[in-house]
Image (tube, rainbow, N blue to C red; front, side, top):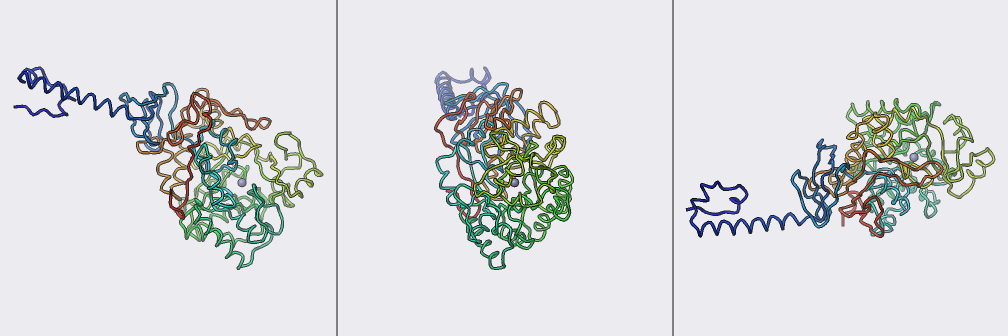
Amino acid sequence: MYVIEEGMCQSTPTPAIIAGFGAPMRKLFLSVCLLTIASTLAVAQQYDLVLEGGRVMDPESGLDGVRNVGIREGKIASISVAPLSGRHTIRAAGLVVAPGFIDLHQHGQELASQRVKAFDGVTTALEMEIGAPDVTQFLKSKQGHSIIHYGTTASHVAARSLVFGAPLPDGTILPKSGPATDQPATPEQIERIQQRLRDELDAGALGIGMGIEYTPGATRLEVIDVFRVAAERKVPVYTHMRSAGRIEPGSAIQSTEEVIGAAAITGAALHIVHINSTCLSDSLVCISLIEGARARGLDVTTEAYPYIAGMTAINSAVFNPGWREKLGIDYGNLVMPGTGEHLTKERFEELHNSSKEQWILIFANRQETVDKIIPNPLIMIASDGAEGHPRNAGTYSRVLAQYVREKKTLTLMDALRKMTLMPAQMLERSTPAGHQKGRLQESADADIVVFDPQTITDRSTFDKPMEPSVGVRYLLVGGTPVIDEGKLVPEVFPGRALVGPGRPVK
Ligand SMILES: [Zn+2]
């Protein structure tokens, strides 16, 4: 007597076994098998979407091979050599299928910037450097209106402005240079700044953003006291350091020491933003300081973008007297985005003294320095993007085109690691949701970029900074295509908030 089970159908019974069945048993065997085949097909059809036959790359597991990826309910449900079928299929042969890029440093949070980020392969773009001035308002304004995922730190510069009685005007993130940026805070004011930051963390901030160069009045003690809040809440401090250049006191090296010291004293994790634009030609020295801190067990990380120019608000404290000596540049190295106007002394004074937040390009770095920074294993890629600078639209494609394909100073897997896994691991310091990001693995979020490694290229320039990159064929955000066959899908807003430990995820 044979007991017929479903499992029998999956291995072909030998003719001898089948011959041993009586006629009724043969019939029963066949019908059970047909049922099994039908139910297997039904299961196979359950994927919402299948990415078929792409080169699947996952920096964490090291997977680099042709696979099929089945997506269900916004998650990666299956990665398989065997064929998968779903309600929709995307043929990805010849294309790379990778985790969507995570940009830790994106100021432009409006839709025009989100569109160009999508064409650059970015599925998550976070305002971590400075932070939105009002976290609740930021999260509310973006809910249901975001193409890609978003999130923010709590802003120290905004908290300080508020406490000094000069809240930031609507739509701005940087304070105009003045008493609120340049004067030291009293102990009582520091306590109020700390309380505001705690409230902002309660509202869902992912960490604390500090633009110390924008608040030169902040004493070393104020900086340490802000790090204390981050340590108490177990979230990182993301910081634009106090100063750039080589002049002592106030060099980039000293600025790096300051924040590493604050991390060591308080125990807060530290992420130093755009080391390229702060440390300039001393960037490799600054990276070696970070290496040293890490070797001593400190949690210190950093990032860079692949351009020789920076951009910031010209009325900010970055341009307080002494900036030309510090940066080793002159008025003519400041260029107006859009028009390409090189500033003169008179034009600079006019713009610097204005209350209007005008962004200005700063040409202060050299290509050979940038070329040495980008391949360094400690460097994550982050754009510092906003309208006016080509980094907003082109950062990720530019790294893939220039450093992976042309200069060959980075492998594709290492480049992807800098754009996916490393920033996801930063996010893990703030939210468990970070574990589901930056990975092309089963049960990870289906935030996926599908691109042509032979053609992916940035097209944005200083003249045309919003020109979208080419080469991204498909982009999925939580399983929803936002780019389909190289075209933006209109009116889809699958972007969701990433929030810190202070606020439960809804
Ligand atoms: Zn900055």
